Length: 228
Image (cartoon, rainbow, N blue to C red; front, side, top):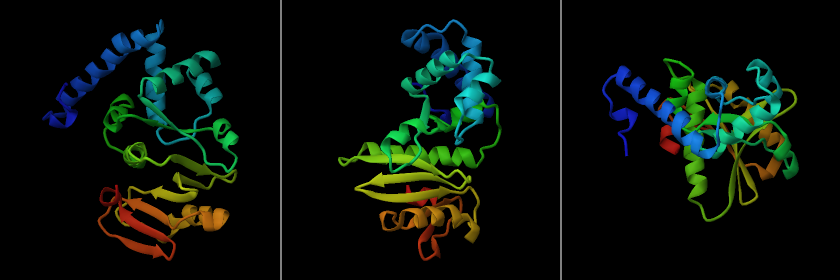
């Protein structure tokens, strides 16, 4: 196996490593999965997805921005997901059919690679969400009992980053990159709990600091690295 990027000493070395990974995926692995004639278009889609990390993406808007047909956009997104680079997090709904219809949030399989493809020098809150998501997915995939990782968004725009559904109970999780979470940061989680009542557990506010405290009686704030 090749060395991980963390073992490389300089940003230049890491950039060369990521460039090689990208080329290998586009020029060899992807061709094994499905022939892609327009590699520049596919590369642009990868970058666009990484620039929209943690966002619900309207596929019609995205294909218009990238000048791709809707069938091509649909096929490319599916290829990214099948090849385990793109991660789509469904929307939570009591109606399970609606989960398949509502717009998912897009994430990337490797947070550092997402930074590289988006040509961003510093991580944002969306990149912390991406890290948290993969810890949640690792937890889900090692369980014997079924669990789902979803997100929640209302028509008014209130949203909770992640909702863990397990054993018919719901755990709302909000992620903040700030070192000191505030009371207002708990508002989305409290809205979710008000909506779903006893079905929802006390919420979790994960942050980048080092303190663990109950900000409200029903929302625990904790460092993301300590919980996951």
